[in-house]
Image (cartoon, rainbow, N blue to C red; front, side, top):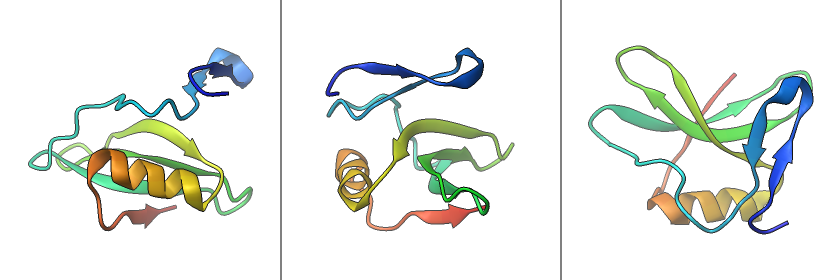
Length: 83
């Protein structure tokens, strides 16, 4: 699935891991977060705006390797979980 795009319900599109950065992370205005669903266990990695709280999705996390790849792509040591 490398480089492919996956279509989800309601026409929303999420990209699979491509090995490329899809977002320009600015430490002064955003923080890295892992948004987790309590019901389904789905995890989405992305960045949350510090002023508005708006979440920008970057990728769906299905396993530990994908989480490590996300952290390596953006040079992160820690990702806060939000529910």
